[in-house]
Image (cartoon, rainbow, N blue to C red; front, side, top):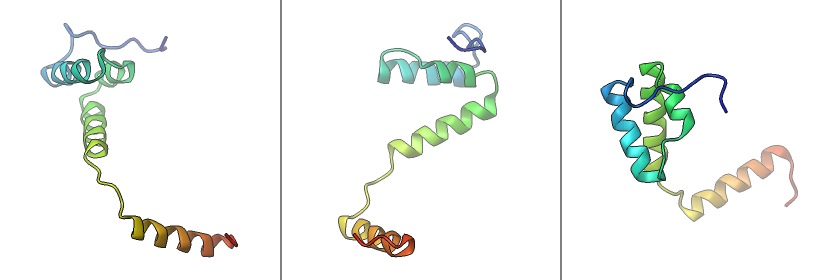
Length: 80
């Protein structure tokens, strides 16, 4: 149980209620960090934006991933 109590759906603002509805649809229940972030609208907005961009992030091309791995290996001196 969290030290800070989350905001219930009845006391939440319209944006938080929308986020609760979306989370319930996606996960089956509202995650506790979301209810705690609802105490401050700017944190909720940032949290939502972060989650939205993570959900829409595309995978990196395999060739680019291999090049990045090779570059990191040379930077840290890894022989593999």
